[in-house]
Image (cartoon, rainbow over all chains, first blue to last red; front, top):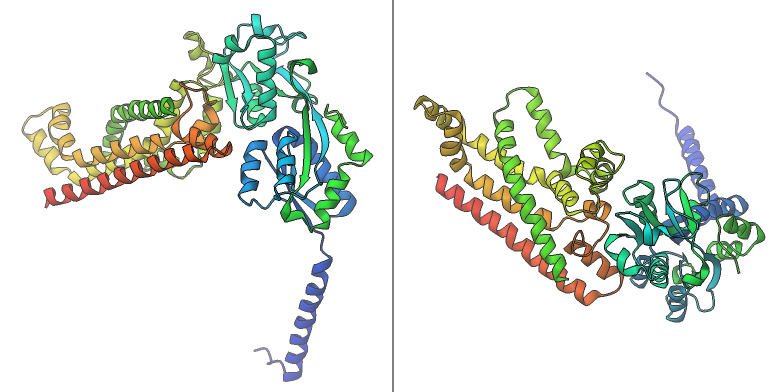
Length: 258
Length: 221
């Protein structure tokens, strides 16, 4: 049988536990902050790299959520707890900044996106996009034009080429540009209008970089949202997006930067 | 909005009819199975109850796609993929709603016991005759419950359809997808109408099942 600890011993033990707790509590405020960021699906890959770069630089963590810009907009109007919104358009961040859901004057352009007609198979898409009028394909994937700016740009392109009516029955709609990419990458759709950033690092497939004259520029704005208004880490993340290191990452995915 | 309602009703009807054809014999086999594999098969059939729709959607996307195991068979019919097609939605719905048909019917067959069945066989009825004239009428309550639940469950299907449907108006754009899109694009009044319709219909379905079960219990007593 182990001897019972004496009263002083017990006191000493509880004092040790207490001081450990105080020590832990004292350390807590120095812990790194975390920023919740809603990211338009087309920006998935660069956002991950940017988050890693930011984390390395500041020690603050970035929690990324990916989806269609329209979905995020609807969620933010209903009080979603995102602190920063990287949209695929300029209109939604401007609206949020104007109506008090975002911080007034905090919106700025972080990237200008490029639309690509892409196939997972080599030799399917020619460098003029003629496959749209002459090709024998059964499905072409686009993002939902109502919620995803890249889907809107795809419809504009088809209309500018005068092939919308013949292509429309073959359109399948992804809930975001990521699903449109997935439908095409899995081969279920032979063609897809995707973001250049999604295919720029892939070695296979065939693609046509859609000329800027065929669709309105996809100006992508960021905005500081109300839940992040007083969070230094959220502001630091937005500032980081304007640094030369961040701009280099963004450009490496095929985006233009302002 | 109305084409999506019609398409949802069509999908639910086709799925329920197919499940009656496939699910009732399957439930009969499972109810009479005595070995361990009967339970294993029952568990497999029940799997869609607990699996997230994304798992089923993911497997279907591969299974029905141009690189899937069905591709050679599809090529025979001049098809590349069954994703984005009504047929694909039917296949997904049959798998997804299978337990809603099989569970109640299997339980009903089990509740009958072996006595009526053996009596029929003693009276020189063939197995098929005995199944048609004895087992089916006695399990009527379970079959009705299974059909109603399968219909309602298919009508409310969302996750699987979102993953393999491609949102094509008139072909794969179902009621639940329209509600999802309406909410996303802030068309909340239309979303509200459809959502209220779905909620009311679902309530009536569950009520109908409960009333049917109560009637069956009284009829048995």
